[in-house]
Image 1 (cartoon, rainbow, N blue to C red):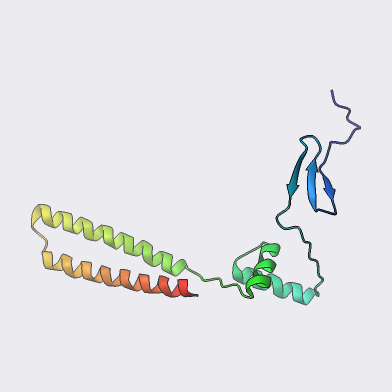
Image 2: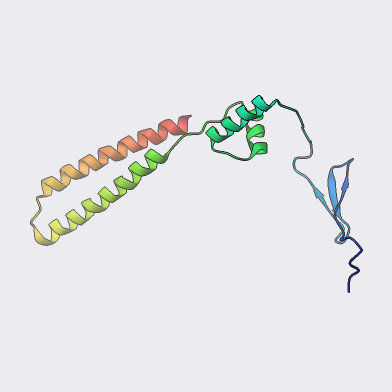
Amino acid sequence: MENPSKPLATPAASPATNTTVNKAKKKEYVRPRNINLAFRVTEEERAMIDKRMAQAGTSNLRAYIVKMAIDGRVIHVELESVREMVRLLSNATNNVNQIAKKANETDNIFAGDVRVLQEHIDDIWGQAREILQKLNAL
């Protein structure tokens, strides 16, 4: 039985190398980010940082500050409308396939109508590809 008054072993940090040594296993862990940066901001600056973090769609302050310091900008693109267009396009494509199947089975649907509908869907896919290419260029 362990002694409840004895604290549990915790990894010891070595300030010279910024490594952590687990004494029980004798393994050394080297932190990939071993330099600590700290700075102070005013309440107004912090509010601006929080606002811009929200606009960028992140809540991780460290990741946001590192991204801004390295890249100088963060672009957050709202893709919800594109996702919705792709979903609707997928539904329309399924409808076209159902129409084509019925036309082949019953010969009651004109093939020309199906071709026109397919051309419209192809145009929509072309527009979607253009939107995605423009977004990738950002």
